[in-house]
Length: 504
Image (spheres, rainbow, N blue to C red):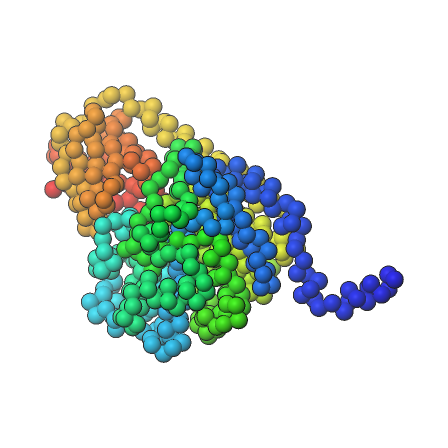
């Protein structure tokens, strides 16, 4: 009998032997997720895992709203933010496959007045360049000006000529949301349909992603929408406003759930087919997976990865001999990851509603290791230790600033700091006296304000009313007894570089 069982085992296809659900997934996933959510203060999380053409896990954990304690399930909607980018890139790859355009077409073919900072880059920049983040700018450069702002897509495209690059054109990676938005604006030039309509007609509806929306304004009032939260700058959960970024739509606007994203993953893992019907030509799928910008070409310390690159709306890298494709998404109060490994016929998506945590990507890595049979190590525990120290240091710094709020007087009279200030890229802000300090109104946004409280040594405590933007120490530049300018900082989640506003 033992010999016969062995023969049966040996005659089974290799895929049948190794496609069994790992013990971590069947026995430990729930406890791992719940502990991770507790450690990282994640109110709600939704996950889907697909393997070998089937959904093996699809569920929600925690709550979508701390006010109502409504539980998260597979239908709870989250902003998937930059996971939108692959949909936009796929739409453009489809159009190339249909010979409606070439990814190597110059952007100026469709927008003759489009300009980058450098005239040579303007003449050369292609659809492929702006989809693969290689125009030479810094990561997130300009995003404070663009993100949640009053600017239209056309106005953002016009302002891109003011983004001074720090690297040579086509040499280095610099994540650029306005670039992908610009790529999406080419779709109506070619098809006569707006980006949202084309994505719905060519991708969402054929894959029966009937509960995925191309704008927050399109989400019906009755739909379950997770509420966004952050622990940034305070260490405790605070609700933040829902992003309104239709102006960056092709780069970030999709709202979805893990039920719909299971269709997207199954399609990606079946060469562009969904339920037996081709939705995306495989040639177009492959175009999105071609590396265009090198991220790394050396062995990565501590992980079995050597080469990483950015494709079109995707990051790709080798991991333990497999090709992994993934992208993360970050909206105010929500972060997500979508990942798939075609050689393993494995895919997953994790959606969460606290933006100040790494658990969502560490959970993804834990699942990958489980399916590849790699030795177990608790990524969440290790990551949380480092995160906790950084958070502790941040809170200590902020507490030190607040200890310096002792009612001292600045160098000049309070009225001297009030007035109208401008920045060439952003536009303007206004400062007025308020509550023994100063109040800032950022005119490029509908509802962005901040306060300035004097500390000492000509330093002020800058606190945004939307905590997501941060708490910082800053100074006015003063010369000849007059205020010349103010430097503002914003959270790295928004943009890394400060802005200088000059007083008029």
